[in-house]
Image 1: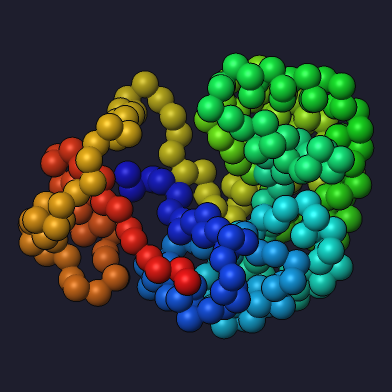
Image 2 (image 1 turned 90 degrees about the vertical axis):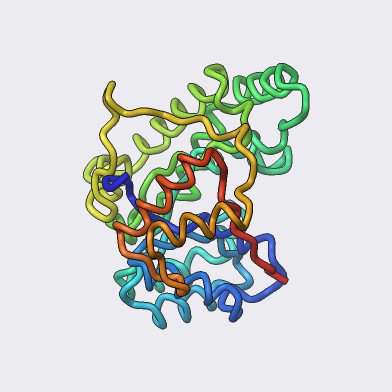
Length: 269
């Protein structure tokens, strides 16, 4: 839709051996820049200098990052300096990374993910209930220095992880602890982190109402080359990666009409 906030990512660079500014990743960034869309990726502490190089090379692109807590701890001072000196880098403090217990191995939503949904929920709830206060205090300690230093650059994020985490018993606890952590910041920064920074940087996006039609595409097959080529021809899309908003909307609607999903493949090395 025309009102959606457009972004590329999350590009999971934390999983790749390549440098964050490897040429293959730069191709993705340039694709985002060519189409005037935001770019989100997940850096690691050992490659934080790559973040600085990237945002300086593409000053007209907005970059959003988040990090595992251990990586944030190791690179916080350097990250703060980079964010203070550049206008196009923002940090997402996501729910999945707030619900964190170091002694258990990290982010609870990922630790307890399993094929048994009810078992995952039960383990998460038990661990959360017995550690809520300590998790709140630890998260405030981890994120408050960043918020204090760049209060206009940090925003709460909705990443919550695996499917079981959307069960109300898990999801509601993630929202609850997020509110407590934000309440632990200075009062003048709370609304900014909670929503105002995101609203200012990315806009309002789509406002949900009863007229919005949600299409479940999970059962749709991948589009064949014949199907995508037909949509390219119908929408007069160029061979390059740069599409106008009208061409992009036309292509998407064409694929919806064919009830198939386009899968972008990339060799990340």
